[in-house]
Image (cartoon, rainbow, N blue to C red; front, side):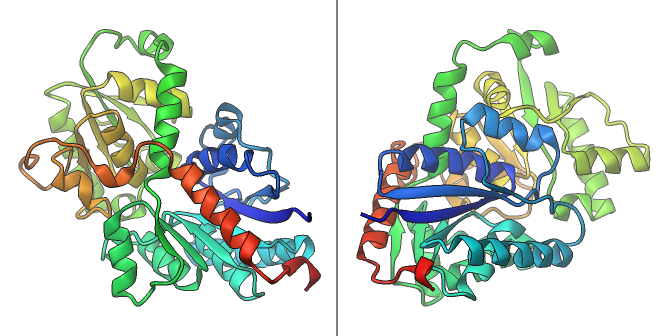
Length: 359
């Protein structure tokens, strides 16, 4: 039997994490050959290479160095280079994750040469089209052949846009990844001791989205908000390179915040296990906070993960308090979303009558 070939497109931290869970599940399907294509969207070693090493993701067969530049420039360069790879490799399908420029470039490059697109984490909507990620999600979903959704809300979003075929609710692959990380780090306290916070209450903070770093007035407001939060407890702020450059350029030294470089995946989960609060503008970290059962303050004006708000685990930074009882979010599943996803992918490939490698 001819093995089916899937090219997986990754380029940023959330994609590495989800890809690790899916890649582990692919190993149980000998009829599928997965090859990784790394666009280089996150080119900092602390935000890229460390994840491949720690999570055991197969080494990329193709590695592009296309990070940096405007959204249009980055996406255009990726589109051009990915098309070359797809034409040479002739995969049976292209697998994309989430909502980055790498996601959109992979989707467009594949669909234009008639290669089926599989979208993991489909159907998310913030309903804020000023966010580049929102545009990436909408366009990627429109051209995808299989849409693997983490929640019923995401399924309903697609239905409202007229997308109903090959839409599956599978649970959240990030849950799978977090359970794996918790098991790997349950006895890890070296970082806490290094930072001098072992046994002490502290919060974890990240901030990197363009909507927060490109608007200087908003950025200043968020820094003041974090300084106020730091009067209540220590805050470990893992600083994205973009955010650190902005602070340096503007001479900003936040009061009361312990600034550190981005940490590896397992070190981050060590911080999440032992912290009391998470402050972030990251979509993935909002959910990871919930999976660790830690309250989260999201430094955005909306979130696509509405379940975390409704369940009382998350709130927007503009809200006065969390709402409701903190309960379980059943839609996220029990940690087997990757297995369900791969089973659906294998079924789709086995039923496909086309063979893109002959085209």
